[in-house]
Image (cartoon, rainbow, N blue to C red; front, side):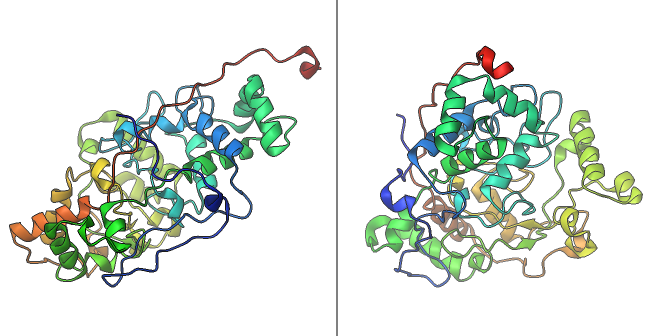
Length: 375
């Protein structure tokens, strides 16, 4: 059965500013409130409706084939249930696709935090060489050939001609409605003692105690948004997938590498691409643990298949990769037994509510411009 997003646009959501529930039980964790709304991109029902169409419309991509939803599928956790996300036709991506659900709360988007807002993230994805591969002027021209879009951009933004940056603003506004604050965990944190099972409560105690997961997965989002090298092994596809190898080398070249790195590196340098500091090789931003019930596989390259695999990985003290010298010192064996691992997995599942599925919008069709618009 189709379900709608847990938060429906309301008068409260239109007001700027995050709200966090006051009830706080275990130290370091909290329930989610409403997402922050940037002052320069206020919400409106009309903007959100436009953004929803653009999210599912391949018009904002290089060859009219890669909408946002191609890598953020509602039925796949608003992500991709494969280790590596899809690429532009003829290519493949090189990192795992992260869910859009609750992305409104992030201060840093993408695995290396390269975007500071949903607006910037949408632009980067639409223009990315292994994702959307679109050119701004071409995408604007396409939008102008759709009467419904011309009218919507005029009504929402006052545009005589659809402005591509306004398209990204509309998509970001829509994504800020894709949040989930009614999980069993949130209900428990807001005072419902029966919202969690006894096993989940044990798991929460381990999460904040013996396992110390809360040292990184903290706050309402369950992420401190910092960067760590956990020793996650390299993406296995780089061993035998020629297209994946080409994409990886393209990224090494495009994001800035020494010639030695380009010729010898067999693993994702992560944060290094932004800082060019050797000490940042192999580090990635801590993801939220919310909605993870539906967003398998896990880690920046999808090398861990299940939530239990993730807990077992940490229990073993992480792994080892090419950048072992940078492995985070706090990642040490946890000494959990099988029952304790089961309890933590049960708690992690409480961070997801019902699966968010929607009826995709009807998309408008392209038509020739009126004669006056061509003069």
